[in-house]
Length: 142
Image (cartoon, rainbow, N blue to C red):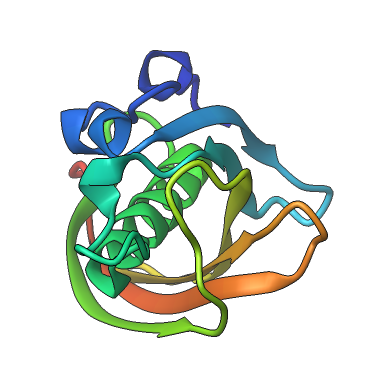
């Protein structure tokens, strides 16, 4: 497992902090698959004029969680290069100040691409949003 401690907090993206996200843990499970968790207390910046977290902001956090999880599993200087495809669904309303948890995990790792999923849950563990994605990988030459 790669040491990703420097990416905790805003994940290296100030927008994560600005919308209230904070990556707090990562690792590889018994199956060797990368995972990451984050707390998310949405800020006013994350919300539309009605105080509801905008769907695109869900996508930002979920995309970052999937990327982080994939990078956790990669060796050396290998890393994600780009998000090739992503689908996001929002199932419940989230508002500024809500206490949310984000989790990202690798589903499958291939040579050139990786597949991941991420979820956002509320304080009652109800699913708020979820995403799946396909990511292009950069592999250092052997």
